[in-house]
Structures are given as structure tokens and as C-alpha cells.
Length: 617
Ligand code: G6P
Image (cartoon, rainbow, N blue to C red):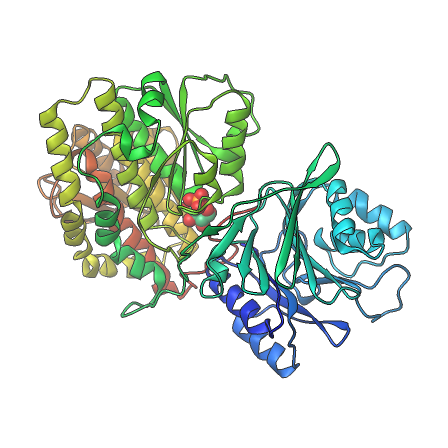
């Protein structure tokens, strides 16, 4: 999703701004731009193509300066078009067509009161050239400017409702960039004699590892070799100190190696990601989740899981584990729903957020909402140790999946499941539901997982053969039962995200209550069929599909006695894996989605309209 980079330096920072955008590229964007303060004027290049094209354009135009801002945009207000791409300029009120800019601004987030502000600014003579909410902030800063950019931004942000991270500079102050954040992430990078801004520290990898995580409501003033952070309290800004942290942000520019796409690479990295996530685990206990976990786990009587997208499905899987193994009542909610509904708060509930990025706006807002209701026992399962989610939660378990570049989440999902299984075992132990022998058995199964996943990955050629048939379909149905119903949901999500085939998942027992009406020879039905207590029931569901001429594609455990036949295709999973079986069964579904998308020729790593990290609501 949208990315920001900004800098004030005495060297030419255009290459740093462009490189920063490249590092954020994988998150998804539809246009990009860069603006600098050059020879007393504002200059910019914008593009609806890739950052590489912007780089060429900026070089051809000779855009070079020590002060500048840059942006990747993921359209919310207004179509992807050059006129809507950031940076936006304000030439001031009643300006003639093509007049030079005075203020340059980039913005992540959504301004909710943009209509009201636009009307106000139009009445003052400001002309709008884009359909964005961002241009409103740009003109507002211009209107409030009275010789001091910091003051203008401080006043402007007090008028904004919604979420924002902004970076802005003014024609009359050549070596100054001001940033502000509320609801969208923004970090300050501290270099020698230079200062940087970015929506993620990763954008500054290789530039500086000295990072300040700005807090909600902070406004930061960047000048050559110095910065000043202020924070509003009751409408007045006062100076605040924020800790400078040494952050070894990974570059995100991982090599593809022998793989065609990052998604394929990440699917194949799962054995290592799982092994790394388990690396430090010697025994099961609250200390795995940070200081103070033991006391909190003793106090809780239930679990509430909040997440979005794929992370929501790992939470949905964990509910089965938490209730069956730890015997603790668990509910799972989509974060964007929870944050706005009336719920019954329970201060003894453990609030667990799950997030690959740790920056998903709805999940962060849901967490804050839970806290505002008095729920203070918070824990996150997250893949980015420096993220807002980790900073905001009392406890955490950091998955070690490494940078995930493909928009469709794969290794983050399986490592989240590992973290959630460890949480399950820990709560089971604390609550007296885990004997030493059981703990040892579970740990043994966890440690064997990388090998087991490797064996599943060896099924790739069989999945490729299926994907050719799938590529010609426009719809698909996924079935699972129990613990594997969320896996069916995740399989359907993967397929629709990257192949654009409409896919739905149902618990197989619901077949007769609606989806059976859709079953024809044109509707492939993918079934997750582990050899568990529900296998016989599932077999009956498969008969129902066959009887209607539906074509079945079944991922069956070796000993589940489902044989291939007419209209029934079976891929045998290497082994039955008990409670951890979802971690194995999701892998062929990832591969099926991946190879189907390849056969359809879609942009697998950057599917249309989707973003890696959804930092707006
Ligand atoms: C986006 C991504 C998904 C991800 C979801 C939640 O939709 O495309 O892959 O599952 O956000 O993201 P999070 O970082 O919170 O896990």
C-alpha cells in the first residue's frame, strides 16, 4: 500500500528517495512520484508505471536536490492517474493555470472530512487538480503558511479527521521537511548531518539504522543534521523526546534465486521459516511470550483473536486448537467488524492480534478499541518485531518467516499457525491440561514439521497437472471440515487473490444448505480430507457432489482410503499429522493457487487492486 520517503541532506537525495520507494514497491501501488526543492523551485516527476520508470523520468528531467519527498500510491480517492499521483503541489489561491508550486506534500491514509475542507478552500480561491483527499491537506498547509512550515503543519493537522502520515516541504524553506502522523505509520531516520522520513524503516535500509518510531499525533521538523519532535496536548504543541533505536531493517530486496515469483519462493521457504520460528523454543511456557506473560495467562478466562485476511484464517484455525487442547473459550473476529460493533468487554479476556506486517490499520484499531474497553491483556503474533502491533501489545510472539514479498501470504500464515500452536500448548499447560508426555509429543511433532512440509512440497508436479484444468474455470468451491474448514477458506482466498477465479469455501456439512445448487461439471470442488474423526462424514459429502456430476479434487491423507476414479482426482498427502495437519494441508492449496495463476498469466506477486500491507481502513 502507499509508501512515503523523505529527506533533508546536503547531498543529492533523489537516488535515496527512489531506492526507498523500490524497497516499498512489493506492498502494492498503482502510481508513484518524487518531488524535490531545486534551484529555488519545486520540481517533480510522477508516473502510473513502475518505480524504475519514475527513476528514468527523474534522471532525464535532471531532478536532483538535498531536500525531497517521494511516494507510492495505492488509489483510494480517485483513479490511478498521474494527476492523482503524489506529491501534490499547491501554487496558492487564485493561481493561474500551470503556476509554480509553493507546497509539496505526500500522504498515506484517508482524510474523512476532505469534502468539507475542499469546499472551504475552494471558497478561498484554491483550485483542485486531482480527485484525492490529499490535495486538500496540501492547499490547507499553503493557506495556513505564514513563514514557518512547522507551524502551518501543526495547525493543519488539527483540522484533519481520519488517518494520515504526511511529509511536506515549502518553496521558501529549502532545507526543511515536516512530517506528521495519526493512524498511519511514519518513522524518522537519523543520519550524520542528514534526516529522513519513511512510512517503514525498511525503506531506509542501507541509509541509516538509527530510527525513531513517531507516535500518534507527533509532528516532526527535519532540517540539516537536526530534528525536533512535537506532540499536541489539548490543542497545544510541546517538544517531546522519542528514543532513537538501532533497527536492522531487512532490505526487502530478497533475491528470487531459481524461482519464478516471490510467492513460489516463499511457499518453498516454509520449512526454513517454520524451523526458524521454532528455533528458540526449548520447552513450553509463558516466557515464550515475553515478560509478565505468566501472570497475565493465569488471570485470563477466554481468548479473543482479532485479525484480517489470511491472518484471520490462522486465528480461525487456532480457535479449534485453543478450545480442544487448552479448553479455553475462544472467539475470532474480523478486526474491521470488531472495531465498530457493540461488544461485551471482558477484562479477563486475552486479546490476540495476528498480523504479518504489524501495521494493518483495522487490526491496530481493533486492538486499541479492545484496550479502550478495559481489556489490557494483549498479545500479538507478528512477523515484524519493530512494528506498531508489537509496540502496542503487552506480549508477543515474533514469527521468523523473514520478509514476505508476495502480496498473497504464505509462509507468514504457516508460521503464525506455529506461534498459535505454541500459545495453545502454553495455555493448556498453565491451565493443567497438558501432561509432560503430551508436551513432549507435541514438541516432537512441531520439530518434525519442516521435514513434513518438505515432503508435501514434493507434490508440486501433481498440483501443476491439476492447475491446467483449474486455469480454464471461472468458479471453484472448497470444502473442509472442523480444523480444516479455515484451511479451505484460506485455499479459496489464495485462488481468488492471485488467479481471479471466483472461489468460495464451505464447511462440508453445509453443502446441502446452499452450495450444492452450484455444483455442475463446470464447478471444480477442492476438498481437504485429512484422516480425522470427520473423514467418514466428509466422504458422504463427496458422494453428494459426485451424484450431481461435480468434479472433485481431493487432498487426502495416505491412509484415508479415497481412491481416484471418474470425476474424482486424489493427491495423497505423505502422512497424517494430527492436530498440526492444517499446516501441511494448506501447502498444496497455496501451490494450486500459484500454478493456476501462472497458467492464467496473472501478476502473481502483485495481484490487481491488492496491497501487501493495508495501512488504511
Ligand atoms: C492484506 C494482504 C494479506 C494479509 C492481510 C492482513 O490483505 O494482502 O496477505 O493477510 O492484508 O495483513 P497482516 O499484515 O495484518 O497479516
